[in-house]
Amino acid sequence: MKLIRRIVFIFLGASLVSVGLEIFLVPNRIIDGGIVGISIITSHLTGLPLGIFLTVLNLPFLLIGYKQIGKTFALSTLFGVLIMSVGTSLLHSVQPLTIDPLLAAVFGGIILGVGVGMVIRFGGSLDGTEIVAILFQKKLPFSVGEIVMFLNIFILGSAGFVFGWDHAMYSLIAYYIAYKMIDITIEGFDESKSVWIISDKNKEIGNAILNRLGRGVTYLNGEGGYSGGSKRVIFCVITRLEEAKMKSIVEETDPTAFLAVGNIHDVKGGRFKKKDIH
Image 1: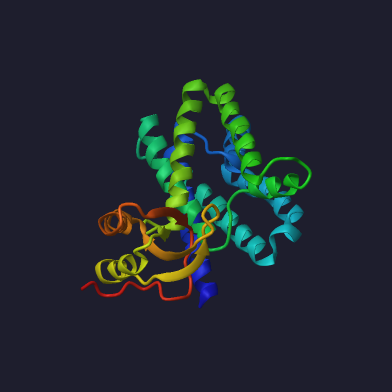
Image 2: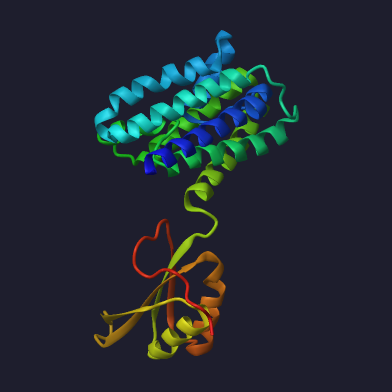
């Protein structure tokens, strides 16, 4: 069942990327970062179909990074790349929905980002740039994210020489929107947050969170580094939409309480399910 679900969503994600490329970005000479961007530039310069370069340029990195990323990830990525390549070939003759480069950058970036995020969320990838970054990261004093950023700046900058600098700037807009949509698709709109509260009124705050917010809490024993006194720490996981109410509860109960809120990308197990609010 999990395998079928993965196949279906990677197929849908790769298909969305094909739509974003051939219906919005490519006809308006707007590129994305990574291997996709290199493929668009190379296809424009040679006149050969985009799908050919999407497959040919990604395959070497899949083979090189096979041991680094694992069999399942490699096969999922290969499947996604092939679907994306076939999709761009089938959609190449379809007329673009808009010839306005700004609209194409915005909506193309949204569709592209959702598609890529869907593929990543279900265990695949559509770009060999990340694999290159993982391989070089071991030999260079840079993180994977920094290497990917450098490569994309170089690729997006190259678009200025090929398509003109106005299209390079539109490409930057599309890339930024796609980047944000990837995050939203992977994490979801209902993003979780961790909450840490230190207060002398820990019981009152804990009960208020349970009754007014419907979330369970965990009490941890701590020790003040400066005072050396014992402290009760309240730990709780909430959604992004509940953050304002959480702050209000703490402020009303103990205005002097220490409150720290952080992002969580994934929550599994435990009793995260929301209880009824009284």
